[in-house]
Length: 314
Image (tube, rainbow, N blue to C red; front, side):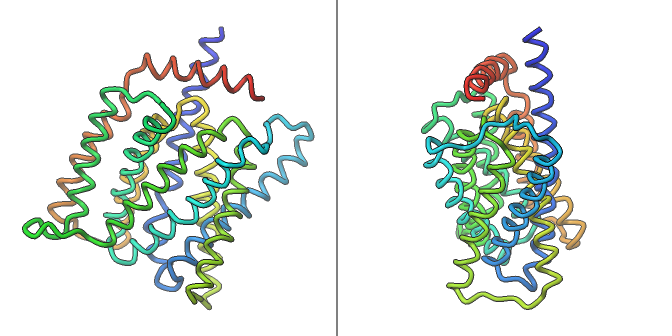
């Protein structure tokens, strides 16, 4: 009975990871459009403020509807991971938004898959999370694909500045994913609200210090709404998925997001794919196949361990 219940929760977690990916996929192409009127750092702040504000309203409504609290709240014990999560979430979207100003939205979307590599390696080295042979193959292929996308001129081996910034964003999010993983047994709504307001206000202050400003209120409102869906709801579903799948496995399912984003970018901006983009796409698809078909036995054992940990904490 426990095994069946666990399997149901695992399938639910997988569906949440895929839903999180689909929501986040709309971020890069629409952000690229909004960056015409909103400077990069302010854009990053509006995305997170939209996430925080939107999820705060959802949290308020859910508390009104369900008086009894079923999720565990954050405590002082989780403070280091909470601070790490907020700081990294200030840096990552700024790197991404600045990167988007100098590279194509399709390239940036596909490069976002490097987040899986960063998340998995950090999960292994710092948090001792298991990485299977198939995931190692996936990590290698995704890394090769990312290098192909980042090299502007193969003959002189010069790198695209925009692509490097997107990769830096992925490394920040990889570390942030592991910080969030340590909080995943707590209330996902509370985590997203703290993440949204903390990172949003932090980025806003950085933007003001840099002298950034915008007068286009319509674009700001669209950015806030985009933040609610692409960041707020996406992060909420991602955190829930991490409870039963772990950081590395959740990232593997989440990796469909860049492909959706790249497809949307090609349609919206009518970008003609370069030869390197097509080669990188093929390598990335093979890599994602290995990542998403990781050994079932270990994932089942890992999920059992996570559920035991969850029951102890709630």
